[in-house]
Length: 116
Image 1 (cartoon, rainbow, N blue to C red):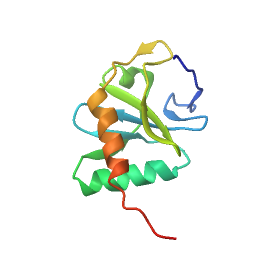
Image 2: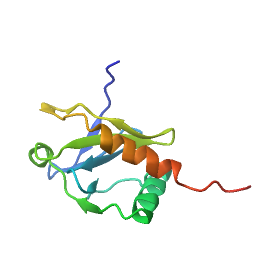
Image 3: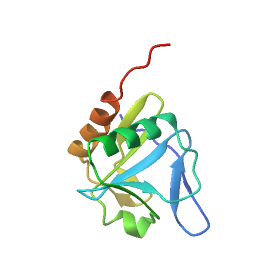
């Protein structure tokens, strides 16, 4: 199934987030979060916390379409999934990075449940 979503780009050409999704990128070693004005989602916070817990490097970086060409994975996440692979943004094709998507899901699954 092919799905399309809008991705927001600021006046400087920096990718920020999608309509109901946070964006996250992968360079093969480090998880990269967009350095832009975004709404931090609950899933994003959980994944960041658990990636830190298992010592996976993370950083915030301005991501442009040009920079995107150098990355090896991209995903969207929201309250119901910690990661769905993105195959293209605009005219830039992105290779599917199954280990990256698996890492995002494993980070989410490592979050301990709270009793209410």
